[in-house]
Image (cartoon, rainbow, N blue to C red; front, side, top):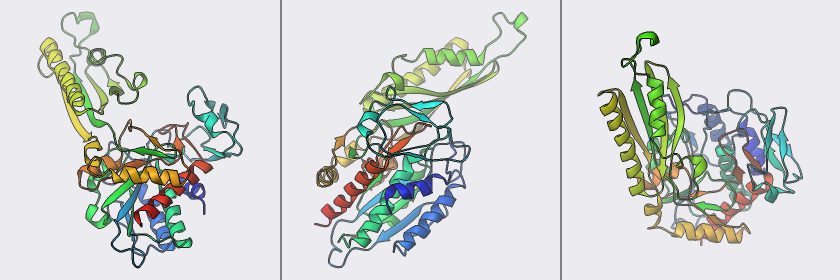
Length: 405
């Protein structure tokens, strides 16, 4: 079975994680996919496959006889999707021999446009997979799951010799909490790769340092007719907080290694308001400086409006894995060689985000990230191609062969 055929099965099982939940998994629906994957792993011969009580799926493929001393490597993908645009049935659409131009997404009124996605002409002639424009597609990261499953099938059917291979499918990557519960000892690998990137051939070992920042503003609400020098409008102060941040350091205005402040939500009224941000930077010193800027804003707002008016909460999420991978660059060198052997153009680039591998690297499992052939993540413009997923699968097959040498 081809990787895209598997992905089409997985994406119709909706698995949005819930950032407001305090449980693991954050949403029970993730078990629906987990149980399906365990059964499929067993059908592929991974007899020890199982899902634990926190919705982590683990399986180990023993080494081919004579290859027991080879490096034990693993492959990881996540089962959850973002919750945005995931409130009803997902309907994948295949466009064969795609012309590389703007594509109308069903009856949604949305258009997958070359203006917004300049790489689209490079996909000309391929079979493009999209949603109908009313939901996400779920390529992130069900493409990665499908490619790992297809790898297992090919190792079996093509009788490719290999060292021990570990696989895992994780919950709650999108809300940043899944990797903290990952059982590295049970996983049993020395090194691993997440398949959670964009285009095929992508090799990533530098990611953002990341935190979540929340400003809570307590106002003072009185009748507006008699509020001179008395009223404190919480939602107005929340907008002032945002104006104190550098206006050109937003996701829209940055690229490459440039960091940003991203206002995710702003809600409230005169009495109370809340502004939620994510803060990102590849450089650790710059990242810490960004957090100090937020603390300074809290300080000056309280000096002006009264102690306790503004409360800032910062929650660290993950760190840049580059310092960990620097000590095991064979992971990157071998991935580059695998791209060459699979006739896939390599793309070594920093992640403008994070993966489970970011946290796992700091927990003792060095874990760079590989592309899956997907694009446009976290919205109704998500897309992939059959051919891109095939190439991503070919690449990890070659990677297994390299570690078996």
